[in-house]
Amino acid sequence: MNRGDRPALRAEDLQLVRGQREIFQVDQFALTEGEVLALVGPNGAGKTSLLLTLALLHRPTRGYLQVNGTPVTPQNTLALRRQMAVVFQEPLLMDTTVLRNVTTGLRIRGVPREAARRRAQEWLDRLGIGHLAPRSALHLSGGEAQRVNLARALALEPKILFLDEPFSALDYPTRNGLLDELSAILKETRITTLFVTHDYTEIPRLAEQVAVMFAGRVTKRGTVKDILGDIALPGRIPAPWETT
Image (cartoon, rainbow, N blue to C red; front, side, top):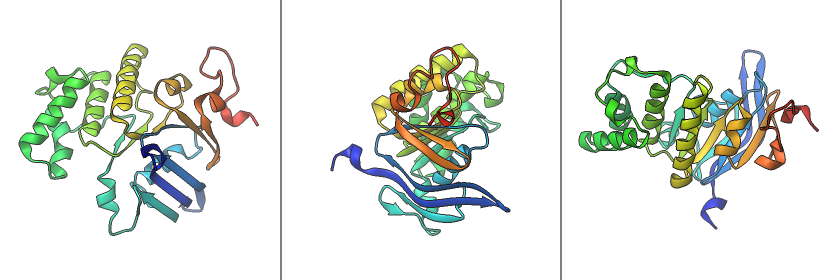
């Protein structure tokens, strides 16, 4: 079996209910090792809830989850969660230095202090903000803060990376630069990635596959070209959930 044939993440009969409302019901979902999958759909479709459930941050109401061949149980959830990293739209940085923001997760996961510092600095350098290491994280621009957020996630060397609209609050030049850098990083590292976005122009630069959610269901999945076609080009083109 080739590396790309092995499932890094697999879900079956996965359901999340809040109160009396079903947030999503997904019969089958999988990410293969090294795959970058974009998840799209209208507001309220359940994309972020599905991402958080797959990232083991929400407990599903029902269903089966497997991470790198290991079934998820209450006993091993924390250990499996530590194989993952999540980048949200808001960086949610701590009131401390940039370097400390990146090293804290490593230290929690048992990485020795000096090794954590080196790894954090390497990722800050890689993302072009190594010079900001001693600065307070509360005095950064939006783009700088999101670079710290990405460095914090990537320094963990996750087997699976979850990105929940990480560029949506950034201006175009900042977003454009980060997309280029993250695209290069994902191609180099081959980290299995699930990427939620509303901006279809971002998808061809990061993802190879696209899944469409509508009303809590994954309705379509395929290559970027198969699902989006020319949707990333200027002009009014129907969204994937508007087409048959």
